[in-house]
Image 1 (cartoon, helix red, strand yellow):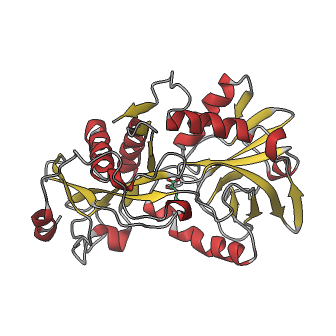
Image 2 (cartoon, protein in one colour):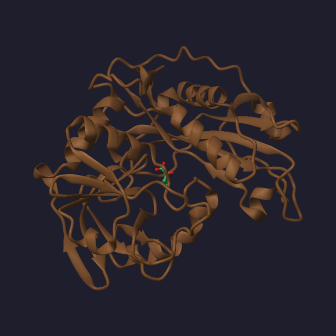
Amino acid sequence: LTQDIMDWTVILNHNVADDEYADVEWDNLGFGIVPTDYIYIMKCSKDNNFEGGQLCRYGNIQLSPAAAVLSYGQGIYEGTKVYRKEDGRLLMFRPDENAIRMRIGAERMCMPSPSIHQFVNAIKQIALANKRWVPPTGKGSLYIRPILIGSGPALGLAPAPEYTFLVYASPVCNYFKEGFAALNLYVEDEYDRASRGGTGGVKSITNYAPVLKAMTRAKNRGFSDVLYLDSVNNKFVEEVSSCNVFIVKDNVISTPPAATTILAGITRKSVIEIAGDHGYQVEERSIGVNELMEADEVFCTGTAVGVAPVGSITYKHTRKEFKTGIDAICPILYSTLMGIKTGIIEDNKGWVIVI
Ligand code: COI
C-alpha cells in the first residue's frame, strides 16, 4: 500500500501460548473498534491479479488523496467472525461465502477481487496473527473486516487504476446496546436504503452512509434501529440498516428474497437452512408492511447482529409488540447457529473451519 506499511512487515511467530490474552476487559466488550496487532494487505497489479499479500503491523494506512474510493466510493467490504473454542482452537464460519459475496460485489462495482483461496487465507492469517485478541469462549468473537477499495487515483469518474484488499480485526460482543434484549424498530417513511438496480444487494460502502440520518434520528427517539421499505411502492419490507429481517406467522417463517435491494446475508442463508432442519416451513417472498405488523414474531439476522429478537415495530404512529422469549422460534435458531459457530454443536454441514 505504501512503503511505510511494507516496512512494518514482520515475520510472525504464531507459537503464542494458547492462554495468552490481550489486555481487554472481556466482560465489557460491545461493538467498537479495539486496535489489534496486525492487518493484512494485498494489492492488485495492473493485470488484475492480486499478489504479495502480507501481514503488517496495525496502524494507519496512506492513500493518494485522489484515490477513487475517496471521491467516488469505489469500495466494498465484508464481515465475518472467528470464535475461540474451549480447547484454544479458533473457528471460522463459512469464510468462503464471504469470499464469493465479495467477488459478486466487486464485479458490480467494477473492481477486480481476490480469489476465494486468497480471501480465506487472509482471514485465517489475520485470525492467527491476532489470536490473543480473540475473546475467551462465551465472551464474544473476533470480528474480521475485509475491505476492497479502488486505491489508485482517479480524477474523472472512472474505475481506479489500482486496488487494495485489506483486512483488520477487532474483538466484539453484542452489536446493539440492548445486548440480548429485544429490539424496538422504527419503519422509516422518509429516506430509502436501496433502489431497484442499485447496489443494495452487495456490500458496497456506498450503502451505509445514506442510512445514518434515519438511523440517528430513530436512535435519538429511543428506537434501536430503522427498518426500510422498498423505494418504489413504499410498502414491502426490505432490510434493517445493518441486518436482514424475518417474520413468523402461525409457525411459518418468511423473509424477503435477496435481490438487488436486499443483501444476501450469510447469517440469513444459514438461518433459513437451520430453520428447515428444525422442521419449519421457510418462505422467501415479498412481505408487505401490513403483514409485518400482523406477524407473531419478528427477528433480525446479520454477522454483526447475530440473530436478534424484535420486541416492537412502530409504523406510522402504530406500535406493535411481538412474541419474544422462550415461546418464540428465534432463540432456537440463535442457539443452534451459535452452537455450530462455537463448536458446541457438531457441524455436519461443513460450515466451520478449525484453525
Ligand atoms: C455485518 O453484519 O458484518 C455488517 O457488515 C453490518 C455492519 C453495519 C456492522
